[in-house]
Image (cartoon, rainbow, N blue to C red; front, side):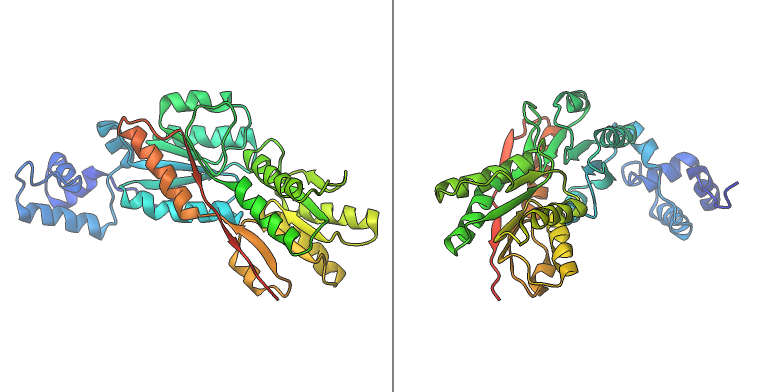
Length: 333
């Protein structure tokens, strides 16, 4: 049995010496409308503050048919890009009058569906999802129940609005800059091939090589997932076959770069001549070997995603697609 005491509004009314209705009106900010005296209001509020009491959000949601909460579904909060999105979104949602609720999917479609179901059961007013399922049917039913927006990733064939980084253009520029500085052998280590983020980054990589008339060798490109271990294993496999590092490595995400750096550190040498990655992190400024990176605009991704949800809540059509420009971080020795 729990040792915690769960106070109800009846308890607050009793302690304040008022009716349940009066306590409810005061605590829900309606005292002035119903001409409840200032003295009575202050007494109720003082009792509520003394006992850290908050009105039931569930009961309020049932009355108003709005919970003033939003749901965010991300694959991994340990992923710097997703953590940055959540960090940027939370204060924006709060300023708009909404509390943000976050669940993780671990890039597992079943876990994602369960997480969305839990958020909907808690009556969130809208959802922002970083999708991990390539099947648009997986989201069609949810989008009929409440406003739903894809952030960071999109799903081909789905009419659900999305807000994503213009990754292909940024990757093409990053890889093209390395080629201009002398890189002619560039290993590509990407995430899941079914994800739009992977497709966009690979398209940018191929475009840069095509522009420079470089034909990638058969073993230059590999896609598995965005786990650190995959980045480490992919570079290890390549070095084992060739007996040397590739001249340059591009990783499709910061977690894959972590794996590459782990492999290099374990060997105790300098690694490839060029290290390139999608996503940025302040720690990259502290490495002895410069890493050139694409930095996503997390604030813009969060702001535009929230705007799309709020538009739907207001009964207005959301912009169907929104592409956010990224910036490049160039580091020198």
